[in-house]
Image (cartoon, rainbow, N blue to C red; front, side, top):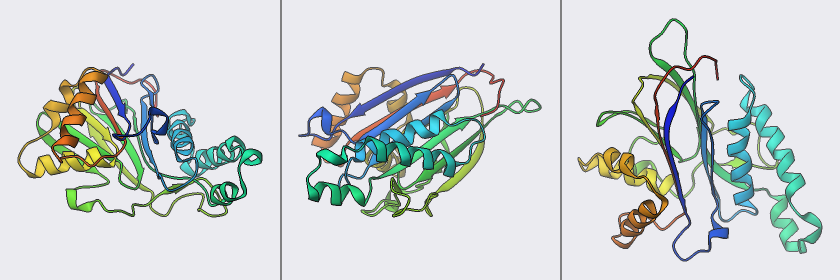
Amino acid sequence: MLRFALNSFQLVKAGNADAEYEDAVALDAERARFAVADGATESAFAGLWANLVTRGFVDAPPGQPAKDWLSERQTEWRQAVPWDSLPWYGRAKAATGSYCTFLGLGFALSPDEDEIPWRAMAVGDCCLFHVRGLELMRSFPMTQSSDFGNRPRLMGSVPGVCPRLPRGLKGLRGHCLPGDLFVLATDALGQWCLTALEAGEPPWPTLRDLQTQDQFAGWIGFLREQGHLRNDDVTLVVLEPQHELARPF
């Protein structure tokens, strides 16, 4: 069984209540599947949709196409929206759908290989970093800090408005060794990581050393105060595969 050293942290935008957090994270170390999402604030019920999307990826049966689990979660979103209690303008906004960016990561082991295969999929600007020691092996889907903008690709909740499989869906496959570091981050923190790397200051030891929510909140607060990090909801997952996985993902 593949085991993981795993830490996950979430922090709402400064000035907002915890209930206004619109990122999402879903983790299943037993099934070796992990996901983060960032709800688009301007859309209705974005936090709900981000949570459904991350759970959809993590809970999907092995080999299920993305279009199938996405379609199932679109149905769940429609059923969860309290249509009857919304004012007319709320119903009109919800009818256009919720939107989020998304990143999912899963691991497997081929019996004839020592390395651990992994695969990822993403829509928009949530980030995945595969690190060995201090060396960045892969960055996905964003590869430099200037890649970030105000209009990332989004995954939508309404099939009639959004395609069942987003045009911006990207995939990546790779291999890792036990002890490699994987970082999943929503956009503000992902951009900070790439900015630090471009400045010759690899952020990986800092991320690896985070252990508690209070430590994470204090660190994010400092970065915001210094103007190094955009004031946005922040989600971080740091994990290390540590052993052998006996079944496919």
